[in-house]
Image (cartoon, rainbow, N blue to C red; front, side, top):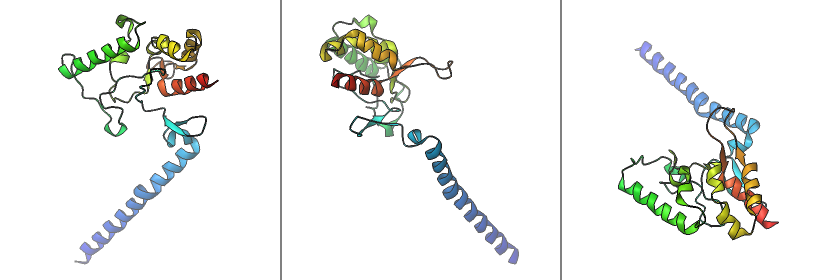
Amino acid sequence: MKNTSSYILSIVRLSAIFIILCGVVYPLASTAIAQVLMPSQANGSLLKNSAGQVIGSELIGQNFTNPALFHGRVSSIDYKAEASGSNNYGPSNTDMLKRTSDFIAQWKLDNPQVPVNQLPIDLVTNSGSGLDPDISPASAIVQVPRISSLTGLSSDKLEQLIQSHTEGRELGLFGEERVNVLKLNKALFELSAK
């Protein structure tokens, strides 16, 4: 009987030690290290406007509906971060075909200067997470005529803005060149305000 109670006491002590180490010490240490080494990323990579108000995270796409702004990729989850994921529709799925044809019809209305055959595929499809904040540089360039006509900014100025916000491949090898839509729209807003 004494052996069993000493085993139980050892198990309780060991459990308490691991609860304190894994449930308190480790999370606090991780949080402290992240806040010191990379505070912006640890706090969600939030972007603020010139008034200091948070306008979003550079890691999560947003639904920009204002035609004078750059638009990102479509999202099958309506850009809800808590619902990250994709419905993985196949190319013959009727819901996906309807969503795609609706998007193309809207594109024709909003961008009459750009033919549909010049529409980059990443503007028509959503990413695996449904929250991709980036588009290809080509997807930003095809939106220039619409934005130029609505803002009065020259096409050259908008293309320079896109070029200055184009990020390269990770480590020069992985992924594709991309443009963060929130950062680009923030810069566009600041440029328009001048």
